[in-house]
Image 1 (cartoon, one colour):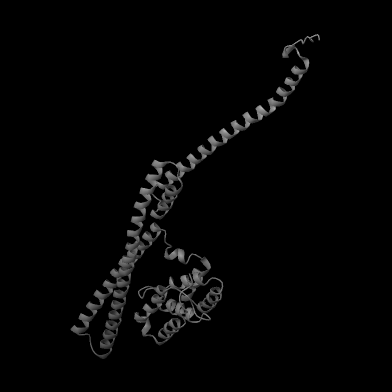
Image 2 (cartoon, one colour):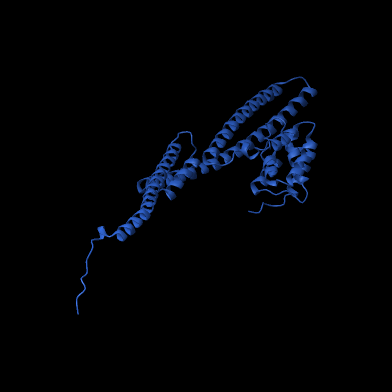
Amino acid sequence: MSEEKINFIPWWQNAKVVTLLGTLIAAAMPLTTFIGGHLQKETELGLNAQKQNHQIRMDYINRALTPNMTEAEKELIFGLFAEMDDQAALQRWAKKRHSTLTSQIVVLRKGIKDKEVQQLALENRIIDTDKKIANLEATIEAQNHSSEPSNKTIQLEQQLRAEREKTESEVAKLQILKESTESLRVRVGEPTREQLTAQPELRALVNKFIGSERKIASSMLIELYRKNPRSVVNALINGILTQSEKGSYRVNLYIAYTLGNIPSGWQGSQEQKEKIKRLMSTRNHDDPTFKRRIKKALTNYAGAFAS
Protein backbone atom coordinates (compact mmCIF):
# COMPACT_ATOMS: atom_id res chain seq x y z
CA MET A 1 0.00 0.00 0.00
CA SER A 2 1.54 3.22 -1.10
CA GLU A 3 1.55 6.25 1.20
CA GLU A 4 -0.13 9.40 -0.13
CA LYS A 5 2.12 12.37 0.13
CA ILE A 6 0.49 15.36 1.82
CA ASN A 7 1.73 18.80 0.90
CA PHE A 8 1.33 21.45 3.76
CA ILE A 9 0.77 24.98 2.48
CA PRO A 10 1.46 27.95 4.86
CA TRP A 11 -1.75 29.83 5.79
CA TRP A 12 -0.52 33.07 4.26
CA GLN A 13 -0.19 31.27 0.96
CA ASN A 14 -3.68 29.81 1.23
CA ALA A 15 -6.05 32.08 -0.67
CA LYS A 16 -9.15 30.85 1.17
CA VAL A 17 -7.66 31.40 4.63
CA VAL A 18 -6.38 34.85 3.73
CA THR A 19 -9.79 35.82 2.33
CA LEU A 20 -11.58 34.53 5.49
CA LEU A 21 -9.23 36.41 7.84
CA GLY A 22 -9.60 39.58 5.82
CA THR A 23 -13.38 39.33 6.11
CA LEU A 24 -13.19 38.79 9.88
CA ILE A 25 -10.85 41.75 10.39
CA ALA A 26 -13.03 44.00 8.26
CA ALA A 27 -16.05 43.03 10.32
CA ALA A 28 -14.24 43.56 13.63
CA MET A 29 -12.93 47.05 12.85
CA PRO A 30 -16.32 48.88 13.10
CA LEU A 31 -17.01 47.07 16.40
CA THR A 32 -13.62 48.16 17.78
CA THR A 33 -14.27 51.71 16.64
CA PHE A 34 -17.73 51.66 18.29
CA ILE A 35 -16.37 50.34 21.60
CA GLY A 36 -13.58 52.92 21.63
CA GLY A 37 -15.98 55.75 20.84
CA HIS A 38 -18.44 54.58 23.49
CA LEU A 39 -15.75 54.43 26.17
CA GLN A 40 -14.49 57.89 25.22
CA LYS A 41 -18.02 59.29 25.35
CA GLU A 42 -18.65 57.71 28.76
CA THR A 43 -15.41 59.23 30.06
CA GLU A 44 -16.35 62.67 28.73
CA LEU A 45 -19.83 62.43 30.23
CA GLY A 46 -18.37 61.41 33.58
CA LEU A 47 -15.93 64.32 33.55
CA ASN A 48 -18.68 66.76 32.55
CA ALA A 49 -20.92 65.45 35.34
CA GLN A 50 -18.11 65.85 37.88
CA LYS A 51 -17.44 69.36 36.62
CA GLN A 52 -21.11 70.26 36.80
CA ASN A 53 -21.50 68.82 40.30
CA HIS A 54 -18.42 70.71 41.46
CA GLN A 55 -19.82 73.96 40.03
CA ILE A 56 -23.18 73.41 41.72
CA ARG A 57 -21.43 72.58 44.99
CA MET A 58 -19.31 75.75 44.84
CA ASP A 59 -22.33 77.90 43.93
CA TYR A 60 -24.21 76.67 46.99
CA ILE A 61 -21.18 77.07 49.27
CA ASN A 62 -20.70 80.65 48.07
CA ARG A 63 -24.39 81.30 48.56
CA ALA A 64 -24.36 79.84 52.07
CA LEU A 65 -21.43 82.08 53.01
CA THR A 66 -23.14 85.23 51.74
CA PRO A 67 -23.60 87.63 54.70
CA ASN A 68 -27.15 88.70 53.79
CA MET A 69 -28.59 85.17 53.89
CA THR A 70 -30.86 84.35 56.81
CA GLU A 71 -30.09 81.60 59.30
CA ALA A 72 -33.03 79.58 57.98
CA GLU A 73 -31.73 79.70 54.40
CA LYS A 74 -28.22 78.70 55.49
CA GLU A 75 -29.59 75.86 57.61
CA LEU A 76 -31.42 74.49 54.57
CA ILE A 77 -28.33 74.57 52.34
CA PHE A 78 -26.01 73.00 54.92
CA GLY A 79 -28.65 70.40 55.65
CA LEU A 80 -28.66 69.39 51.99
CA PHE A 81 -24.86 69.17 51.92
CA ALA A 82 -24.83 67.07 55.07
CA GLU A 83 -27.16 64.53 53.44
CA MET A 84 -26.06 64.54 49.81
CA ASP A 85 -22.40 65.49 49.41
CA ASP A 86 -19.98 62.67 48.58
CA GLN A 87 -16.88 64.38 49.91
CA ALA A 88 -16.28 63.35 53.53
CA ALA A 89 -14.49 66.53 54.64
CA LEU A 90 -17.14 68.80 53.14
CA GLN A 91 -19.91 66.65 54.58
CA ARG A 92 -18.42 66.88 58.11
CA TRP A 93 -18.11 70.65 57.78
CA ALA A 94 -21.69 70.95 56.51
CA LYS A 95 -23.04 68.82 59.37
CA LYS A 96 -21.22 70.96 61.92
CA ARG A 97 -22.49 74.19 60.37
CA HIS A 98 -26.01 72.78 60.13
CA SER A 99 -25.99 71.81 63.81
CA THR A 100 -24.73 75.27 64.82
CA LEU A 101 -27.39 77.04 62.73
CA THR A 102 -30.15 74.81 64.10
CA SER A 103 -29.12 75.79 67.64
CA GLN A 104 -29.04 79.47 66.68
CA ILE A 105 -32.53 79.26 65.20
CA VAL A 106 -33.85 77.70 68.43
CA VAL A 107 -32.43 80.68 70.36
CA LEU A 108 -33.89 83.15 67.85
CA ARG A 109 -37.34 81.54 68.06
CA LYS A 110 -37.21 81.87 71.84
CA GLY A 111 -36.31 85.52 71.30
CA ILE A 112 -39.44 85.94 69.17
CA LYS A 113 -41.61 84.47 71.94
CA ASP A 114 -39.98 86.74 74.53
CA LYS A 115 -40.54 89.80 72.36
CA GLU A 116 -44.18 88.84 71.81
CA VAL A 117 -44.64 88.69 75.60
CA GLN A 118 -42.96 92.10 75.95
CA GLN A 119 -45.12 93.46 73.15
CA LEU A 120 -48.32 92.26 74.83
CA ALA A 121 -47.25 93.75 78.17
CA LEU A 122 -46.45 97.06 76.47
CA GLU A 123 -49.78 97.09 74.64
CA ASN A 124 -51.58 96.52 77.95
CA ARG A 125 -49.65 99.39 79.56
CA ILE A 126 -50.64 101.64 76.65
CA ILE A 127 -54.27 100.61 77.12
CA ASP A 128 -54.06 101.40 80.87
CA THR A 129 -52.45 104.77 80.14
CA ASP A 130 -55.13 105.56 77.56
CA LYS A 131 -57.79 104.86 80.17
CA LYS A 132 -56.05 107.22 82.62
CA ILE A 133 -55.89 109.88 79.93
CA ALA A 134 -59.59 109.49 79.17
CA ASN A 135 -60.49 109.77 82.88
CA LEU A 136 -58.27 112.82 83.35
CA GLU A 137 -59.75 114.50 80.28
CA ALA A 138 -63.28 113.86 81.57
CA THR A 139 -62.41 115.15 85.09
CA ILE A 140 -60.75 118.30 83.75
CA GLU A 141 -63.68 118.99 81.41
CA ALA A 142 -66.17 118.56 84.27
CA GLN A 143 -64.22 120.94 86.52
CA ASN A 144 -63.90 123.53 83.77
CA HIS A 145 -67.68 123.53 83.34
CA SER A 146 -68.45 123.73 87.05
CA SER A 147 -66.01 126.38 88.28
CA GLU A 148 -62.98 128.52 87.57
CA PRO A 149 -59.69 126.70 87.02
CA SER A 150 -58.11 125.80 90.35
CA ASN A 151 -54.78 124.48 91.55
CA LYS A 152 -56.30 121.02 91.38
CA THR A 153 -57.18 121.56 87.72
CA ILE A 154 -53.64 122.71 86.99
CA GLN A 155 -52.26 119.60 88.69
CA LEU A 156 -54.61 117.41 86.67
CA GLU A 157 -53.49 119.09 83.44
CA GLN A 158 -49.85 118.50 84.36
CA GLN A 159 -50.64 114.88 85.09
CA LEU A 160 -52.48 114.64 81.76
CA ARG A 161 -49.44 115.97 79.87
CA ALA A 162 -47.21 113.47 81.67
CA GLU A 163 -49.51 110.56 80.78
CA ARG A 164 -49.65 111.66 77.14
CA GLU A 165 -45.86 111.84 76.97
CA LYS A 166 -45.72 108.41 78.56
CA THR A 167 -48.09 107.03 75.90
CA GLU A 168 -46.05 108.55 73.08
CA SER A 169 -42.88 107.01 74.50
CA GLU A 170 -44.51 103.59 74.90
CA VAL A 171 -45.98 103.68 71.38
CA ALA A 172 -42.49 104.44 70.01
CA LYS A 173 -41.05 101.54 72.02
CA LEU A 174 -43.84 99.27 70.77
CA GLN A 175 -43.05 100.13 67.15
CA ILE A 176 -39.34 99.35 67.67
CA LEU A 177 -40.28 96.08 69.37
CA LYS A 178 -42.56 95.09 66.49
CA GLU A 179 -39.86 95.84 63.93
CA SER A 180 -37.24 93.82 65.81
CA THR A 181 -39.69 90.91 66.15
CA GLU A 182 -40.40 90.97 62.42
CA SER A 183 -36.65 91.01 61.75
CA LEU A 184 -36.22 87.86 63.81
CA ARG A 185 -39.09 86.19 61.97
CA VAL A 186 -37.31 86.78 58.67
CA ARG A 187 -34.07 85.32 60.05
CA VAL A 188 -35.71 82.05 61.14
CA GLY A 189 -37.84 81.73 58.02
CA GLU A 190 -41.20 82.49 59.65
CA PRO A 191 -43.78 84.61 57.80
CA THR A 192 -43.96 88.26 58.87
CA ARG A 193 -47.19 90.10 59.57
CA GLU A 194 -46.99 91.66 56.11
CA GLN A 195 -46.42 88.29 54.44
CA LEU A 196 -49.37 86.76 56.28
CA THR A 197 -51.58 89.38 54.69
CA ALA A 198 -49.58 89.46 51.46
CA GLN A 199 -52.56 88.91 49.16
CA PRO A 200 -53.20 92.48 48.02
CA GLU A 201 -56.96 92.07 47.66
CA LEU A 202 -57.32 90.86 51.26
CA ARG A 203 -55.09 93.58 52.70
CA ALA A 204 -56.92 96.22 50.67
CA LEU A 205 -60.30 95.00 51.89
CA VAL A 206 -59.23 95.08 55.56
CA ASN A 207 -57.89 98.60 55.01
CA LYS A 208 -61.36 99.65 53.83
CA PHE A 209 -62.77 99.03 57.33
CA ILE A 210 -61.83 102.57 58.27
CA GLY A 211 -63.83 104.10 55.42
CA SER A 212 -67.36 104.28 54.06
CA GLU A 213 -67.04 100.98 52.13
CA ARG A 214 -66.49 98.91 55.28
CA LYS A 215 -69.70 96.86 54.99
CA ILE A 216 -69.03 96.00 51.35
CA ALA A 217 -65.45 95.02 52.22
CA SER A 218 -66.71 92.85 55.09
CA SER A 219 -69.19 91.05 52.81
CA MET A 220 -66.48 90.38 50.23
CA LEU A 221 -64.14 88.93 52.87
CA ILE A 222 -66.93 86.66 54.12
CA GLU A 223 -67.43 85.42 50.55
CA LEU A 224 -63.67 84.92 50.04
CA TYR A 225 -63.53 82.90 53.26
CA ARG A 226 -65.36 80.06 51.46
CA LYS A 227 -62.44 79.65 49.02
CA ASN A 228 -59.46 80.62 51.16
CA PRO A 229 -60.37 80.57 54.87
CA ARG A 230 -56.83 80.56 56.29
CA SER A 231 -55.71 83.60 54.32
CA VAL A 232 -58.86 85.56 55.17
CA VAL A 233 -58.55 84.82 58.91
CA ASN A 234 -54.82 85.70 58.81
CA ALA A 235 -55.61 88.99 57.07
CA LEU A 236 -58.29 89.86 59.62
CA ILE A 237 -56.36 88.91 62.76
CA ASN A 238 -53.15 90.56 61.57
CA GLY A 239 -55.15 93.67 60.69
CA ILE A 240 -56.04 94.28 64.36
CA LEU A 241 -54.79 97.67 65.56
CA THR A 242 -53.62 98.56 69.04
CA GLN A 243 -55.72 101.00 71.05
CA SER A 244 -53.25 103.81 70.38
CA GLU A 245 -53.28 103.38 66.59
CA LYS A 246 -55.46 105.66 64.51
CA GLY A 247 -58.79 104.13 63.54
CA SER A 248 -58.49 101.24 66.00
CA TYR A 249 -62.15 101.43 67.06
CA ARG A 250 -63.66 101.20 63.56
CA VAL A 251 -61.13 98.72 62.14
CA ASN A 252 -61.22 96.32 65.10
CA LEU A 253 -65.01 96.54 65.30
CA TYR A 254 -65.37 95.47 61.66
CA ILE A 255 -62.79 92.73 62.03
CA ALA A 256 -64.96 91.31 64.83
CA TYR A 257 -68.12 91.99 62.80
CA THR A 258 -66.72 90.03 59.83
CA LEU A 259 -65.64 87.06 61.93
CA GLY A 260 -68.98 87.05 63.72
CA ASN A 261 -70.90 86.83 60.43
CA ILE A 262 -68.99 84.02 58.71
CA PRO A 263 -71.55 81.25 58.09
CA SER A 264 -71.00 78.09 60.19
CA GLY A 265 -68.33 79.90 62.20
CA TRP A 266 -64.73 80.91 61.55
CA GLN A 267 -61.73 78.66 62.09
CA GLY A 268 -58.34 79.74 63.39
CA SER A 269 -55.68 79.00 65.97
CA GLN A 270 -56.18 79.48 69.70
CA GLU A 271 -53.66 82.31 69.50
CA GLN A 272 -55.83 84.05 66.90
CA LYS A 273 -58.88 83.62 69.10
CA GLU A 274 -56.93 85.09 72.04
CA LYS A 275 -56.09 88.17 69.98
CA ILE A 276 -59.81 88.81 69.53
CA LYS A 277 -60.41 88.11 73.21
CA ARG A 278 -57.76 90.64 74.23
CA LEU A 279 -59.84 93.36 72.59
CA MET A 280 -62.16 92.98 75.60
CA SER A 281 -59.52 94.72 77.73
CA THR A 282 -59.30 97.81 75.51
CA ARG A 283 -61.07 101.11 76.12
CA ASN A 284 -63.03 100.51 72.91
CA HIS A 285 -64.77 97.62 74.67
CA ASP A 286 -66.60 100.12 76.88
CA ASP A 287 -68.70 100.91 73.82
CA PRO A 288 -71.87 98.70 73.73
CA THR A 289 -71.67 98.11 69.96
CA PHE A 290 -68.00 97.16 70.11
CA LYS A 291 -68.68 94.84 73.05
CA ARG A 292 -71.51 93.13 71.14
CA ARG A 293 -69.35 92.57 68.04
CA ILE A 294 -66.50 91.05 70.06
CA LYS A 295 -68.87 88.72 71.87
CA LYS A 296 -70.41 87.56 68.59
CA ALA A 297 -66.98 86.95 67.01
CA LEU A 298 -65.91 84.80 69.97
CA THR A 299 -69.23 82.91 70.00
CA ASN A 300 -68.84 82.25 66.25
CA TYR A 301 -65.40 80.68 66.68
CA ALA A 302 -65.52 77.12 65.28
CA GLY A 303 -62.15 75.81 66.42
CA ALA A 304 -58.75 75.29 64.84
CA PHE A 305 -58.12 74.21 61.26
CA ALA A 306 -57.54 70.50 60.74
CA SER A 307 -53.83 69.73 60.29
